[in-house]
Amino acid sequence: MLDEWSFLGFLTPPLFVPVFLALLLFWGVRRVMSRLGLYRFFWQPVLADIAIFTLLLWAVLMLSGALPAGGRT
Image (cartoon, rainbow, N blue to C red; front, top):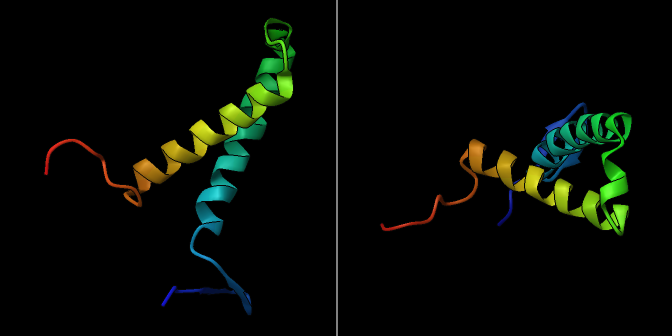
């Protein structure tokens, strides 16, 4: 059975914290990219945003130990 965490009386799924951290990092990266004008290099900036968020979420999950590191076992 999946666990749920109680946070201020609300039941939240365990993936809530990593997604929230990735979202905070994404907002920072997006702000820096827009200030530097890096979005002009992308054909579809929305697809770049999705890819960046996905990579940040993967990095947060890997650093937290929620995903296996891969390689030989």
